[in-house]
Amino acid sequence: MTASLPRPRVLLTGASGDVGTRLRPLLAQAYGPVRLSDVVEPRTPLAPGETFVRAELSDPAQVAEIVRDIDAIVHLGGFSVEGPWETILQANIVGLHALYEAALQAGVKRIVFASSNHAVGFYRRDRTIDHAVPPRPDTRYGVSKAFGEALGALYADKHGLRILNLRIGNVGDAPLDRRRLAIWITPADLMQLIRIGIEHPALRYEIVYGMSDNSRAWWDNRRAHELGYRPTGRSEAHAADILAREEQPDPIGDRFQGGSYCSQEFDHPEPGASGTGGTA
Ligand code: 15L
Image (tube, rainbow, N blue to C red):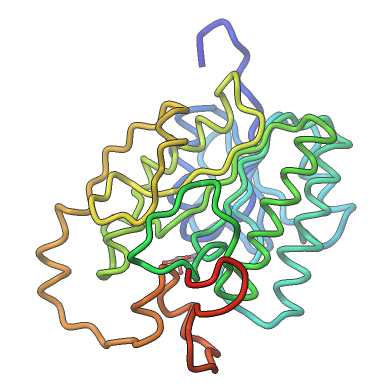
């Protein structure tokens, strides 16, 4: 932000989760006062300038309340792993629609949507994919993220909201395992992407991958780089440690980008051999 522009009023949903808790100080540093929302209380005490409003995303009245007087939403809220259909439906489909609708009514200008690598988890690891590939969700959760990206496109094209979808890999201080060497992102790099979503003057509707500078990546993240992203995290610095660790083989999950999300409930003999796009 330049000094002459007013600071955007930012809402962070899902603020009490692991990623939300890590982002809070970074958002406060960038934007000053931030409104936090979640279904449960924040994990750490509120810092000066932070306010917290508890809200159920599936309740339109509560959602209308949290988006009031907000310029930009960072939407981490909803259900963040695979779950029963009813749970995913309420949190990530009904709830997301309520959020977009309330945002439109309230005049919110921008939404940064925490999509997920699981929207494209059934691409094979030996294939490099970019932001333009069709979704290949690996779970009901992944389907809900693909839905979220599509819903964002509708609100961008029809109503002019500015939307950045982040297909986030795995956020943390270090990659957790071999798969995460490809998809890991530091909180600081994630914050860089969020700032692009909130501040980039030419942003209309984009999908980018939420990963650091990972040499083992299977994503071509050039769109993020074109928008100014310059990640500083390097998973390769952790590679020797991770590769020295024994890992349980997962014959299905190890072939696909989504890992164990692909092998859960998997029950046919020819992975990726049929359906749209043929072999992934
Ligand atoms: C996700 O989308 C989840 O929110 C996170 O908990 C991790 O499981 C991550 O994907 C991953 O693929 O490592």
